[in-house]
Image 1 (tube, helix red, strand yellow):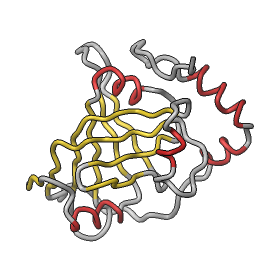
Image 2 (cartoon, rainbow, N blue to C red; image 1 turned 60 degrees about the vertical axis):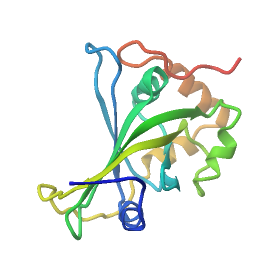
Image 3 (tube, rainbow, N blue to C red; image 1 turned 90 degrees about the vertical axis):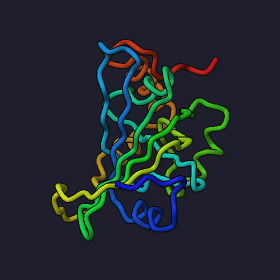
Length: 182
């Protein structure tokens, strides 16, 4: 294991080559659920050597956003499923910009090709580390699934937004999720 001060060029190249990453968050309460979510598409951006962002395209729950709103803690993990074995973990504190936030359109510019997303998470990194990844198996990337994009495209923006507010207002532990702008 090696700890880095910033995302060095070697780590940046590794991160950009990955087709998938994982996001982990947890509430402050020991009674709450730890959340671990896989992410795909081209939804990760390195903003500078100590700051990253990812595009939250939506899903079944609002756990990550609820946890970030409550305490900010987040870990991102990338695994090599092909080539040299490696795992990179990015630890930090996140801020969330959901689609109703005044800065959302500006933040979305970091993700070309995406015109609709639930949230964007910007993460100030406080620990960057890699490890061997010897236990991670090889997998072959065959392509992205298109169901999420098709589902979003089949709704008008207003219907999509209303659906998000209805289904993403609370986490499974009852923490606040999406809030309608005032």
